[in-house]
Length: 119
View 1 (cartoon, rainbow, N blue to C red):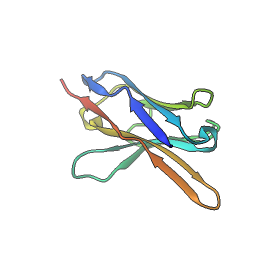
View 2 (tube, rainbow, N blue to C red):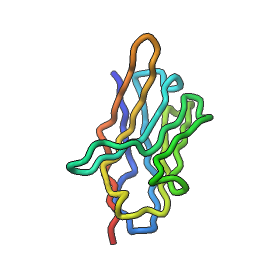
View 3 (cartoon, rainbow, N blue to C red):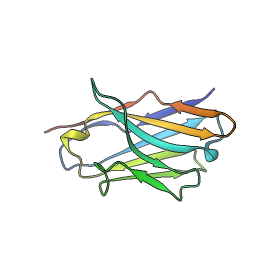
C-alpha cells in the first residue's frame, strides 16, 4: 500500500522557518522524482519544488527560489522541504508527490499539511 505522510506544517510568523517532511512507503522510493506542491482555496495546485530520483537535480517555482530548499534521503525514504523567510503568501496546504514514468506513469500524493504564515 502506497503511503506518503507529510508532517511539519503549522503556524509561523512572517520571516520564520518551517521544515516539512514526507515519509514514503509501499513503493521503491529511490526510483521516483519527488516534489512538493501547494494549494490555496479556489486556486489550482501549484508546483513548489521537485528533486530527481538521485537528488542531483532540483527545480523551484520562482516565488520560492532562494528561500526554500528541497532535499531527500533515499536511505530513509523521506523528502524534505526547508522553508525560510516565510511570507503570508506562502500560506497553503502543502502536498508531497512521487512520480515515475516508465512504460506507464506512477503518480502518488500525500494528504497534505497546512502551513499558515501570519502574525
